[in-house]
Length: 106
Length: 106
Image (cartoon, rainbow over all chains, first blue to last red; front, side):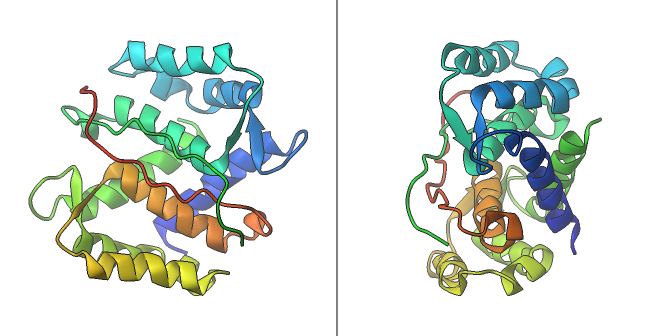
């Protein structure tokens, strides 16, 4: 497998570890998501160039703890937080739209 | 760093390797993206449960080779292809929306 495929498999493993604890294995409760982010993205959160954005994302999780998050939404959120902390993206204009679920079937 | 952060750093490295070859380092040309997907997601593309969806994505790249793709759009596309090949997502209803760029600034 390539580096990219191995990285995506790792992201699935992390998602699966938290999402399989209760209820729908394809969804993360917002509480599970918050615990995941605190546990698995700690250095990204600490080194973020935009504390306001990180706080906004985490506060949004707090304010609406009853919803659930899909794998695509989870990856999109992690990507947003990554873009704010990786040195590569210094001076970059990020996208903020989060994908919505519910179409198609495998 | 955590497994998730290491995985995201790997994804950035792969994106950077292809995006830094010419023009804007924060963008992939669609041709670069197609080469990346062929080169880095080959086993995912081969084992996809939805050949039609993969062909649709690749054909879309062909039909519109003049556009560019941001890091968020790239990750979203890789996520869509991942969901179609990883065994974990058997029976899962995927999201198909792709994020659009252009708001905010770091």
